[in-house]
Length: 30
Image (cartoon, rainbow, N blue to C red):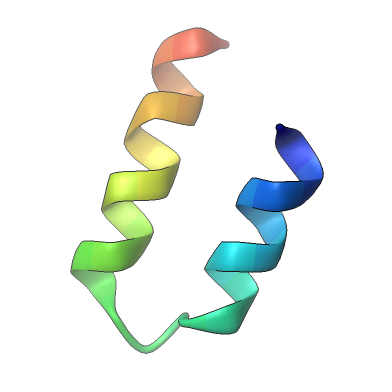
């Protein structure tokens, strides 16, 4: 799941909303 998240984040780093939808759940799981 980690690599997928990084790939998606790197794919669309220009969209803050898209990034937060990815990274918020990641921080929650940590």
